[in-house]
Length: 195
Image (cartoon, helix red, strand yellow):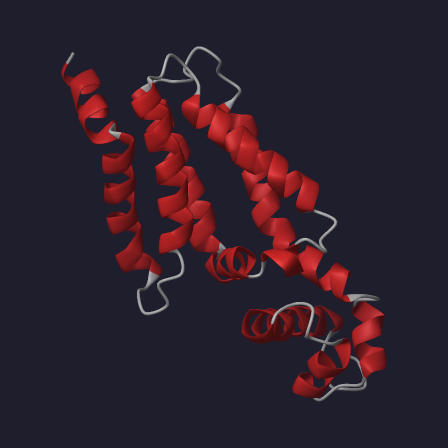
C-alpha cells in the first residue's frame, strides 16, 4: 500500500482515469500532473512514482487500443487469399468497431484532441495502423466507388463513437448496419452466401 491507502496498481489506474477525464475536458496541453494529483488527493510525487511525464500517461491510455489495432491488422493480413472478399472485409470492420467500442472513451478523446495525441510516442504506430487498415479494406479489385465507400465507412466509424448518450450495446448494431450499407457489404455478403 502507498501512503495514500491505495495499491500501486490502483493508483496508476486512477491516474489514467483522471488524466483521461482532464485530457477530454480541457485538452492534453492544458492538463497538468499537479491537476491530476489534486483530483486524486495524492501528492505530485505519488504521480511521479507511477508516471514521470504526461506523455507516459497518454501512452498508457492509448497503448491497449493501438495494440488491438496491431493485432487486428496482422490477423487480417495473415490470409492473403481472403483479402478483398466481402465476408473478410465485414469481419475486419466488425473487429475494428468492437475494438473502438471497447476503448470508446480513449478513442473519442483521441479523435477530439489530435494536437494532444500528437505528443504520444505511439503516434507513428497509430498513423501506420490507420493507413494499413484503409489499404486492407480497399485491397482487392475495388472500383472507385468501393474505395470511396471504404474511406466514408472509416469516417462514419470514428464519428459515430462520439455519441455520448448512446450505450455501446445500442450503438454497435446500428453502427454495423450503417457501415455495412456504406461499404455495400450487406448485399455482397448476401450474394456470396446465396452463391
